[in-house]
Length: 168
Image (cartoon, rainbow, N blue to C red; front, side):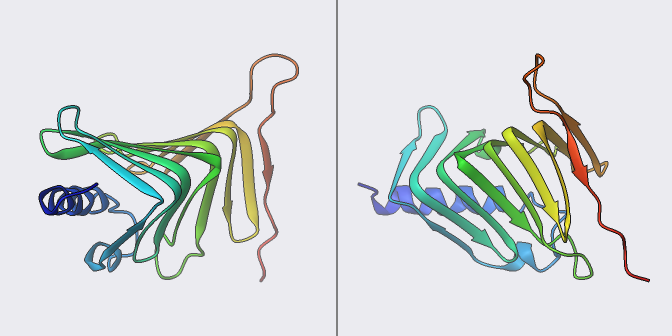
């Protein structure tokens, strides 16, 4: 059971976490953060917060849905978010003039300091009608670089892209 001190600590932690999504709509960072899950566990000794069961985190246009989300912090700053599910989903509108980007995978790993999101396990990214998929996709936010990788072995999932023609 969460006491008042733990709830305050949790919401401060989440506020720091979502202020790191700097490539989103500028208004996203100013929006309140909403979190719902079937359960939450804060371990101050390890710096880990775990949400389980239909986890939904939203802030402005940003949304994470997963079966489980683990937040790791170092020195009161969130350093890593790991979302798992079948699939876990991250969605956000990068800017007002761009469509929503959706990322899906069995595991989404967001390293805050490096500003990288790694999607593994049937990884897929969709924007508008364009899609790309692979066993692993790494998005470097600061550099706006996406790398997609196939699975290992002859039966591994190959990288696939579908790019729709743009209207004139």
